[in-house]
Length: 168
Image 1 (tube, one colour):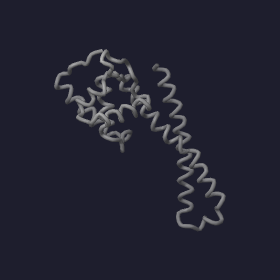
Image 2: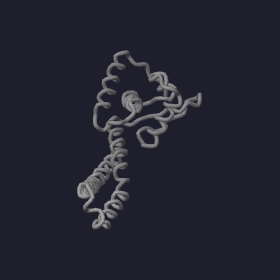
Image 3: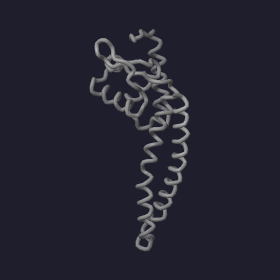
Image 4: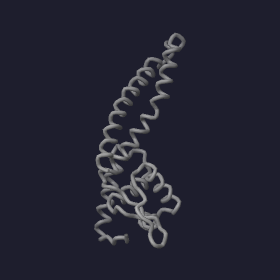
């Protein structure tokens, strides 16, 4: 697999994609370089860390960090190793990448369920001691709201998982 040379107008389109991704709630709080690299995989499909470094101007360490995170999240995978020993990474379709990213967000929310249940139980157990404290009722309501949301996230997680499995 050799690197494809792109027309300069492609860079303008890529920039629009980066800006669109960065403006969506899904990517709030994400490092802009993560979004840029994700966008590059969406538009170019096959990339090496060296190519990413050349395109973005980022250090090899930062590229490695972002690529490893994307590998862990299942957004990209190792596709091949060049004759020179460079790893070529690939991405699935943009839609599948976004589904996998959504899954990682939902997964983070679901991981908090046990801790939130324990905190809510502790509040309920100590109700007599705490119920007159400022904010007790509101905090209890927030825990209940969060736990209800986690149930919905879990259903979303299962639906996203089904879509990802169906696409493979």
